[in-house]
Amino acid sequence: MIDFTGVEKRRLSYELYFRWIRFSTRFLFFRRFEVKGLENLPKEPFLLLCNHQDGLIDALMPIFGQNKYRLVFIARGDIFKKDFVAKLLKWLRVLPAFRVRDTGKENLGENDKIFDLAAKILKDGKCVGLFPEAALQYDKSMGSFKKGFARIAFRAEELADYNLHLKIVPTANYYENFYGAGHDALYNIGEPFEFGELLDTYREHPEAAYRQLALKAQEHVRPLMLDITDKENNEQIDLLRIVNQDLKFGHKKPKMSERLACDQRMIGALSKMKDDSVDEFASLMEKAGRYSGLLAKLNMRNWLIGKKVGFLGMLLRSLLALVLLPIYIVLWLLCIVPYKLPDILAMKAKDKRMIASFRFAIGAVVTIPVWNLLLFGLSFIIPWPWWCSLIFGAVLFFLFVPFIALRHFYVKFYHRWRYFAKLGKDTVLAEAIEVKKEQEEVLKWLVG
Image (cartoon, rainbow, N blue to C red; front, side, top):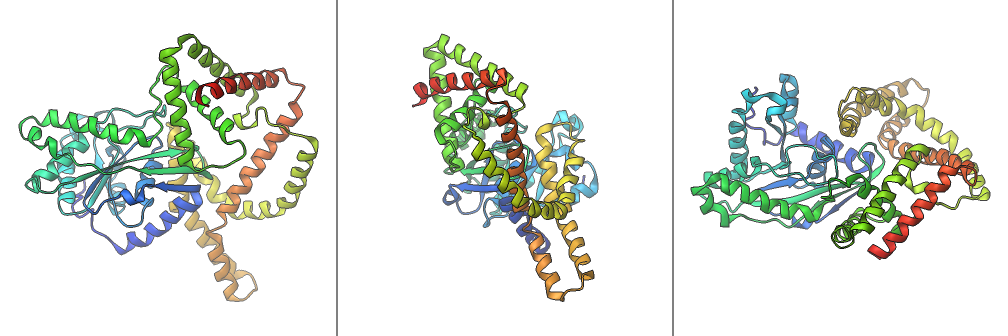
């Protein structure tokens, strides 16, 4: 394994690329990127914890959700197998953590070196971030916190003769959609906490201190995220929260923090319902399961079901689609290669949840800059003044925003026509509308 000493040093090349990736994260990949609690970030040093539900994208949120600190982040060790990849990740300020299921037992000893290095970085006044769950969580819930982060935290205090007063910052990500660009996201930063009351325990019983700190950290992260604790009914509850959002907000596009608060209220009410009204809860879960099956048969999303769609409205939308079509064609020609190439490569991903990571890592980091530079170079062939090429080159990097917005418009336009054509004719659609109404009635009574 390569030497990761000096990973925390700031480099001019990293600073320049940091600005491009931050721009890509906040304005190209996400439609609206909300950061809540930025004022909670303390002075350096601090250890930042974040939930883990969407691969590489999860790390982008804490790294680029703020502009003041340059985090050293700890990621899964199996991606560091090749030296050139490991060197690239070191340049990106990423350290490996080794898990048995990824790299086998033979590399677990390397964790001691990495954790000591991370602790030294904290002791020297810098910041470290990691995923305490140490694995992706696929059911929108919190996994158990492993002891790695606690080992780093206590070791940092030990190196500083227990006078570091290290703060731990709980944070969480919340996404509108896990798989594609052009959606909304929230990066939620909680109030930092210390763990001085556990230092005596650590001196005498380190393992007990690790467990206690892990439990304490979980209780600080949980309120910041979507945590569906009912494993048996996870999918049904996830669908019900979408139905509930549609019921509460309709055509409005609230902030993601408002949507998260809405989800948390509903999940709390469902948990109480499960305890107090077992039969009613079972009936609602049955409806949600049936509704999910109907949506799959129709190949439609919840936002369409029950919508009032008239001929005049569809005619006006069709005219708008016709007017915007030339613009979309131009944007498609300019953007389709860097947009589609990551998708082709992402098909090789065994883990569906990693698709968004492929799209961002390959698209924003490689294909968009390379493709735009190629088009910029070719633009000098056009017989126009040189300054037109400069303007063209600058504009290229902003074109993905309208391209993705128009792509979403045409996808929704297509599905609206499908929905309109089936209204009053398709029995499956009629049943789906009826089941959705039944769920909404229960949710109105339950959540208010």
